Length: 227
Image (tube, one colour):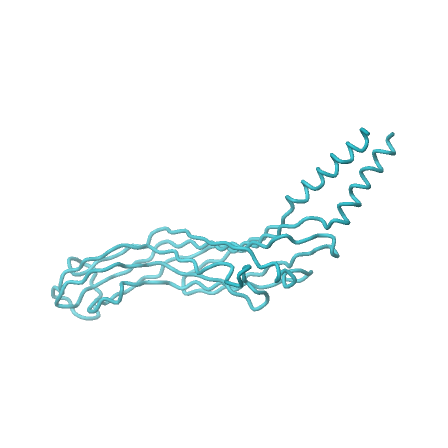
């Protein structure tokens, strides 16, 4: 009786180990937007079918810092509204489908933005094209340090695209972004910010049942041999 109990304990321990198995790959990108980069990841090696892929998680992180946005009201009337300044990024691939269980993009476009409001007086003496940031009819916005991210899980129906001994590419596209609501009479200028980040692919997996059974039988055989 004791030996069968011991075998059960060993089998449960093996199952516990299996649920924790994962492979994590992270690739980085960076530069001055607008920028594109191609990141390469390894496919999931199921060791000849002895490993079962449970889930594929994809994570995207985008960090931006610096840069400036100048707003200059050249109109004869006051101007006010909201501004956004920073960068937006997304991922795509021509090798694999980056879709979730609802067959929607596994991650949304990530937006690393400095936001706020502006209220500018009517134009005071400056001319079109001088991009004068001095008040009260102009302002200078300094880009902050902003970090954002998104993640999701690939649809299980697509796991076959990710399984094998090869690689696949993920393309990153980061665009500098500025917006002030299209208020008439305002001219604007930007100095580039710096953007960087990473894309992570995580494979979660377990040994397939037959493999687990063999491990359990092996453990039981060892126990019997000791007796």
